[in-house]
Length: 115
Image (tube, rainbow, N blue to C red; front, side, top):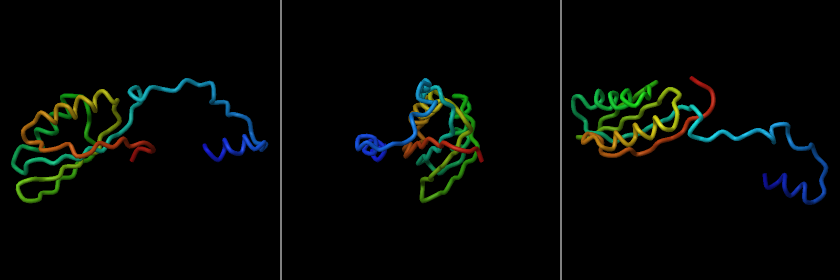
């Protein structure tokens, strides 16, 4: 963007603005996308079921999940199916209330092609 602005300011000739310039920009909360959620959890029976139930309760579907144990804890990484930001926010809030979840370490919005 900076290079384009410099080019225009220096009198450079180039294509005009795109036909998309007049389109409305969708609110981030209205866009459905996938999310990668990383959790630090207790490593004991029932943890995965409780986490999956929290996702389901908030209508956030899990596409894949990976759990790696380390000591008395575990790292759980979940990739979701497409969902809106409100479902993600509710899920993360509810996960934070579970005594088995030590930390919601990261949440990453995943844009692009579906796998």
